[in-house]
Figure 1 (cartoon, rainbow over the protein chains, first blue to last red):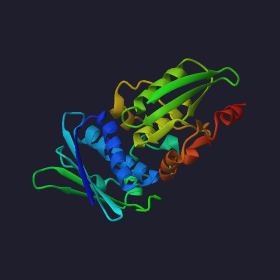
Figure 2 (cartoon, helix red, strand yellow; figure 1 turned 90 degrees about the vertical axis):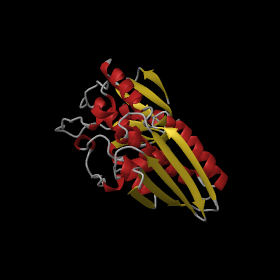
Figure 3 (cartoon, each protein chain N blue to C red; figure 1 turned 135 degrees about the vertical axis):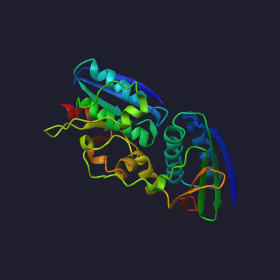
Length: 142
Length: 136
């Protein structure tokens, strides 16, 4: 079992550090490239949403925890932005042509597509807590 | 992310090479550059993503925006940033518009295009020669 925690400022420039941190973690697990990519992708979506829409560009902090147990990785994101449950965002209409689609709005859909579990809760101390769980092949094949 | 632009005379095209990650840190830069190229004159814009190793939904927004820019369906001013993308209204075209040509998208980027139902909205090529040949 492995556990790690990272605290970053709610700035878009923090993404590069987060990607590297995830890659170091998954590399030590022997996780395959595709699953590592999906973990970085889902994290990019959630962290970008927290920065752009949660804090709306104002200063803030984001805490991310990674935990591995057996063939699963659990990621927990904590922020102090106003309460917002991203799991309530509806699935976009994927059948529309480009000219008929709104630009954007695909981030949470990508989180749902790549992760096995996607949960939200408001903590007693007033934070947004999002939890993702992703299974992976512990033989390093995916 | 770094952008390089290669101009081709025949066929007349500007190839934007997207190097690195296309995400929330960089998507506006690509839209801005494509808008500048589109404004400078005729010719097709091609995105070469051979060296793009990561694309989030923000990157997808930039592909969507560039596709509309080259159709003349999106205002070029991006100074209002993120919110402008979220609230932009788009004109609808009567005829079937030309698709943006994208070269060298890796499996993970193609996966993102597939998962969002957008793969069929672009012309995907394995290499730049095939994309240029398709222009004629």
